[in-house]
Length: 257
Ligand code: APR
Picture: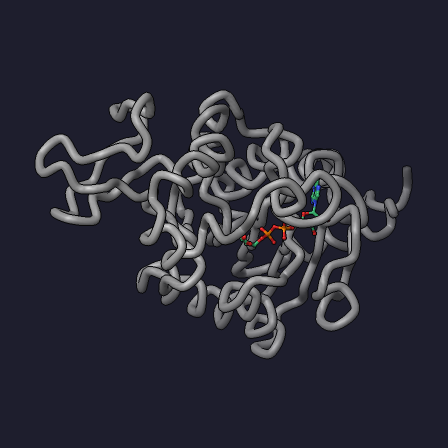
């Protein structure tokens, strides 16, 4: 494993443009459960609550589950070492862009500034009637579904539900990142959800080297991954950071320890 970390760090140091592509797995060590796999949300809840047609037909029913999943405890989650390492990479010019499927805001809380949220952000709520936006913290969830203070319309989390299209800006930024990247760093995603799952494939087609961090193989691992770093995001990214940011562990010394 250490050899693979050393190789990954070597590539990251030499890359002219690196993109991080993250999924639910990067936030697991912050206490946020993933969607699929062991302990996954979809083993406990019906994913239809995040289907836009289902939500519109029964907003109160959907909101009961959505509140429990996303609003009762998300605020207590803090960025972990994997988020922090990506933020430091960005600050030190070693990471050009972070594309995330996550809606938990943890990349921004870690200090990353160039973040494109493919699926939106749970911190914002949108009135389906007058399109006024709210920050979740200013809304009371005592009454479900929450409603707009201005017009009484139903509020919907401003993240992308199944059946909704991806916002244009993150979509364009992600496609551009795929075309620009020498190194594409995938962290903690199964790669099961379209169209986000196509971005790493595009990056590979454009010639990027794919580094993947995950305790389990994903749909990418056998197909496009060049270096698979098997393990938890926090543990692997801590090791990567230790080598990437330490002047004493430069390329020449790698392999000596
Ligand atoms: N570190 C890194 N990866 C981890 C960790 C960890 N500590 N724990 C679990 N994982 C991995 C799992 O092995 C799995 O591959 O994280 C991945 C989580 O996969 P999903 O739950 O499918 O999450 P994601 O790929 O982000 O889902 C995509 O599906 O329902 C939607 O819109 C939702 O954005 C989400 C999309």
